Length: 186
Image (cartoon, rainbow, N blue to C red; front, side, top):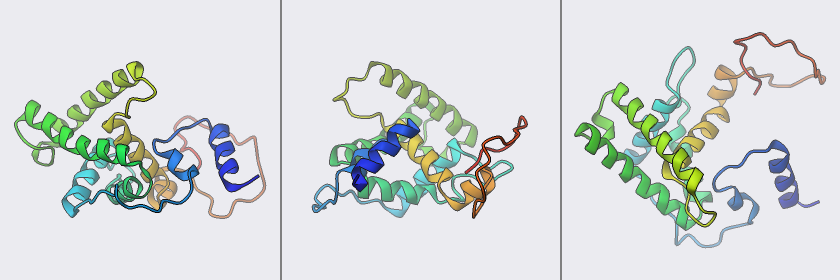
């Protein structure tokens, strides 16, 4: 079994899909013609979107895990040119929705307004997913949300502060008691 087959098998076993996962299975990229460029303002914008999705509570939020930078790396290095364009245009669409609803760009509205805006965009992307054809592009907010969750929970902060983490696991114990409110395992 080669690496590509192993990754495909693991993905199927875990039952999850990540937008852009085909890039991990498709081998090396030799062309950078579709590579998008993110500015520091774009990274700050994505950090705020991520922080709104996963805010700081009893644990650090997405901004502390530098999820905005993570998103830019994944989009630049792994997304197809088509998905890169959807993501970049989506950042503009999110700002346009903010201007339309609140009269200001996303970075200048209140945290509650940001939350309400993203909740409405999440409902929009869920409806889009229901009616989406296979060849249709992914919804930009779905991409942002998935990258936020992936970036946060695979970061050191997410794995050690939000989840239970054992650096060097010992023996397998398939019957660990779970109490309501316990953290999931990293």
